[in-house]
Image (cartoon, rainbow, N blue to C red; front, side, top):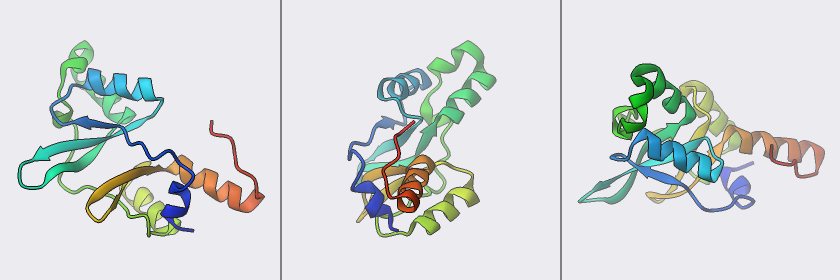
Length: 142
C-alpha cells in the first residue's frame, strides 16, 4: 500500500502556520481544525513558500512547561527544529513511512511531491488504512 492510496480518501486541505506566528495562534488553529499537528511554513525569497517543519501538541506542552502562561506569546520558530524536515512522497510505501515515524519518534509526516506540499499523513491514517485492508470496511475516525 502506498501513501497516495491513503491520500485519495483524505481531504486535501493542509493547515499550516508561519514561523513568525505565536504558540497561541498555532494552538487556536489546531483547536479550530480539530487536528494535532500543523505544517510550519516559511517564506524564502528564492524558493517561495517552503515547508520547514511540523508543530504539534507536544510542542505546545513543551512551550507551556518551559515558559508558563507566557507560552502563548512564544514564536513557533523558537520551538521548531528546522535542521532537516522529515517527509515522504505519495509514492512511498506505508512500511517506509512507518519506519520513518518510528525512527524519528513522530506521528505526522508532510507529504511532498515535486517540491510541493500535498498533504500530511498521520499514524492514525495508516492504522485506519491497515484496519480497512484487513477488515474490508472503512473504520470510523475517532
